Length: 355
Ligand SMILES: [Ca+2]
Image (cartoon, rainbow, N blue to C red; front, side, top):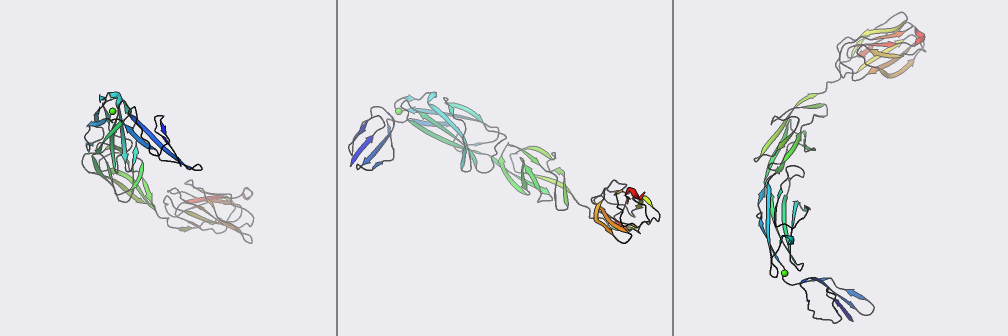
């Protein structure tokens, strides 16, 4: 069995239990490999600190201190070393990290100063949940030995309650949809955007009416120092039901290019109009059906051919809501015709050969 030590300062040994003296203070890594001539095993690295490490002290902020959005936090510290005495500013490195639940958003290290300031943001990454800042000072002595001290400061938070009237609707907080009611914890003084978008559910439409704080449909808020509620009130409306189906008929007895029939009742926007058309011709086709409100009719049931007659059904859905007149055309004696629609008039035009 053979032994091979390296001590990290270019020195080595082949004895099993060597003694080694380091000439210079510093941090070294020692390793041992053991061999039986066939297989070699290398030990875990062993860190050896030679000399006296420095001491770091954070003078401010106080560990456990608190902050609000926009606060300017001053930090300062000292570093001393048994060998070097008071350490210069060049020996200082500060790390100001934002901690969120179990993970870290590291800040850019600040190097070469014994003190400084940083400002708590008023927007951006929010402080909801378990958040805080960790301020760590690392000092390094002339031999490269280090010491680190850290303090944590905590946010002063407030609960904001959001709701809608009626409740159970969706609000947007900083652009993220949330179902009401909900409570949001945030940093006092932090800026947020709240929005009560118009929305619908099933046949019910919800139109924004007002916010309890008098703000616009979308507006910014600054988290106050005490708990606050924000409620958006909506005006609700239900889609109109499909209109009443009515019947009326026109029976021109001479050839005409257009036949018009008035619907019996006023119509409601959104209704469905259906028109049944018959004519004494087993080959002609209806070319178009329209009404005076500008609604365009589509074929509902294809033209049916009988012995000397035809008939077809047309419809227009989601109609505009006002009275209108209707007509149709044919060159033969029209079939007694009936219309089913919620109220208006429609017109239909015969093929060219009819006229
Ligand atoms: Ca030292």
